[in-house]
Length: 59
Image (cartoon, rainbow, N blue to C red; front, side, top):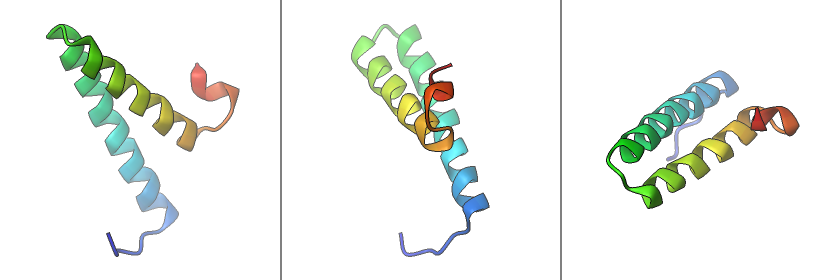
């Protein structure tokens, strides 16, 4: 990953990753795999904290 990206591109990539993680959390929840569901939910929380640090990220 040697590409140089600006802040807008970085935010776009983080939002894409967040959308993918949300979709995967739903998929694994529907398939009854709580371990993977929790793992993707953790990824969602981390990406939310990156985009909106602080208490508002938990909402």
